Length: 156
Ligand SMILES: [Zn+2]
Image (cartoon, rainbow, N blue to C red; front, side, top):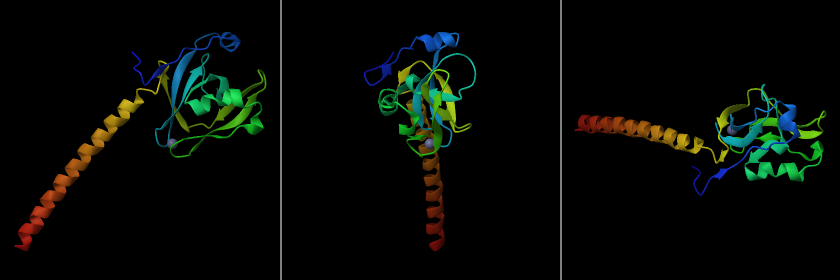
């Protein structure tokens, strides 16, 4: 169930979907360098994700807006990670359909199946990771405390 702060998106069904034989699904895309989520995307058909059509980007808002703002590829910015600024994609036109897209740089992103909810559940995983980090820090602190204690002991 989507709560108030999340949006449940629905898959688009159009000629592009039928051209690719259906099998449309949502993907959460993450930067492979820093793990930052950068897009909720609808992938149509089977096969590898080589490009991101602007009209299949659902979130975040600024990125989803490009499909209505851009009319040619020279206006398009590069696709970069919003957190670490790593280059993920470059503007292109898929000539067969005259559709604007980002040509994705191999290895720059990680994809995960999504149920169309934005922001993704990954946020929870991130906080889990932070928790682990805190435990680690707590252990380091306790080691440091032991060390302090020994120093105190020696100085006596
Ligand atoms: Zn990044």
